[in-house]
Length: 283
Length: 127
Image (tube, rainbow over all chains, first blue to last red; front, side, top):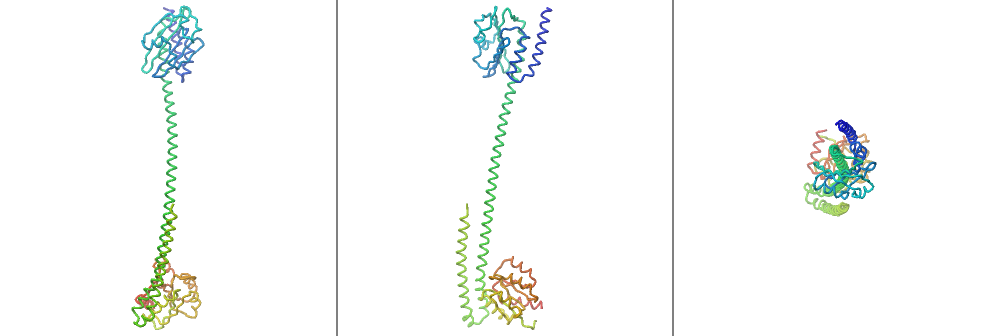
């Protein structure tokens, strides 16, 4: 009674230390190291193996005194583990060292036992196996501490997985943000270019309008000059006697009209030329 | 009514324009003393000899245009008055003409008997 009470207290203290260190763990690699360091203070074992299954992924460790093996693949599951996952029934069987998997061939056993437990959490399944013998004795009273250990590891594993997902999401988000910034830059460049094109086009149209206005103004002026002489002669005609009109004004009207006609023809030819110039300068 | 006969000088590079304006001025009884020039420079150098009271000035002329003519005239001491006679209908030209004190009217070609009569009554009123 006293002995088991003392053992319980020591184990509990060891577990407290383990929990304290576990809380600082941030990666699966560290998780393996911390378990390996504390395991021997929690219970006796020759081999301790824990496999965590989550959807398609698997993470696990095999702990031997002074050695840790990491598992990441489904094929690392031993036949008795597959059975355990299927039946979910804990067991303890006697085992000979020759029955151990290949990678545990060096483990020597003196009346060996293989223990197996299955634990289910909301998102994970955990498969635990332990090899003990008469020299490193594991008793059924140690099963509770194995369960406690599994609970702590499961919750830690969940935390690490979530933070990994978060980190990956963050990286993805960051790359999206960078991509959006790039696209924005592209769009801005397109807009700016568009703006320049519009400005250049507007300026060009303004210049052409100015040219056309100049042209029409010049034409009007050039035409008005000879026309005013024709009109001036007609005004004179109203106030002169017939004979003077016939002898001096009519020949002048003829002359002035001829001049007006010449100017009209010149203006038309020049305008056509100018219009062709303006049109041909279009892009 | 002015008793002294009005002396008029016509400056237009177009001979025919001078012919028309001279006839109209005569017909309307505005003046019978008219000298005409088709070369502005010649008109300027004969100012002393001719001593005109009024100059009918065209704007659009080669070598010396109406504006240059006015600028040179500004240096003359005599208060010779000017009537601009142009085929231009530009309001810019009309505004520019207002800057010259001696320009008393801005007329658009062709002149008519009526325009000249209005100008005459304007001058009579002014004295």
